[in-house]
Image (tube, rainbow, N blue to C red; front, side, top):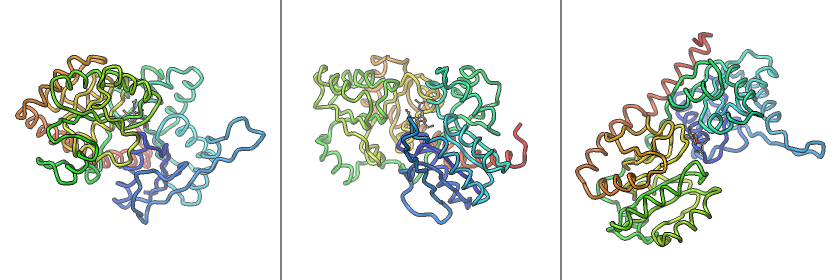
Length: 382
Ligand code: GMT
């Protein structure tokens, strides 16, 4: 199939999934056309059947704002016609699904459109009255709409007030990108730990995000403070965003600033998972939590909040633990249990790795997307 993919190519989970799916489908022989504002950052090696089409938005004095949406739609229409694309896969209802629909009209080709919802486009933007109708339009005019969790599918029907069927297809990790860590720390792992000043006996907790308020990094720091009071440990915080400065201040206020390492944005987080013992994602909104899955595939046992799709990724007391939003006390109790009871940790890790390969394997999820692509092309979207 000849597939056009549009996403935000930066480091967010939606861009990662769109890119990883494109790579996976290219490896399966499909022709993939990324139509994006930049080369998606996860593309590391050239593949002959992946083409990147850059959307360059010019600014003119007559425009108050640069016309990203119009320029993108025009580019998509050009690519549809030039490469005779079979379908578009748009990530995010606004603006991308809407741009896909506009591009379809511009190209005058009856191309099929799949839209994947990732969360923020519904759980944040869906409450904005200036955008809600555009989101609804993008969803209802797409041939097939998928969401990255069952929770997001339900929230979409409720918040956007649409009866459109939303098909949940979970996120995945390409297995080679997140190797499961060996039982013994490797020399490379020892080197990384020591260059960040982490002592061999210290346990390592990790959180990766874009430091937005919804990520509740305050709860993560509170949880860690309680763990650190009874166990030698470090907290790795990877990412950057609006909460960063406040969270640095919080670590200082709690007098744990030497134990909380703010490492900024990192392209290759897998190396940090190799030296970690626990991953925390205690968000108040989270449609899936791709960073959790990446850590779990690396062998790190998770503690998550009960928000959104996190409770679909973690099976409570089987493959990790869940706590209520904001409950740092219970989170720290679970963390201490996992870090001091090796048998509990290992049993949970074994079940977690089995579950990750059973429910979130790249082949399984790519099969599901291919199934729905075929269904669309056969004109059977029901
Ligand atoms: O988490 C973010 O703020 C980034 C956001 C994005 O748009 O890239 O992530 C969303 O999509 C990811 C991939 O499907 C999901 O794993 C994240 O849970 C989701 N974020 C939220 O729902 C807050």
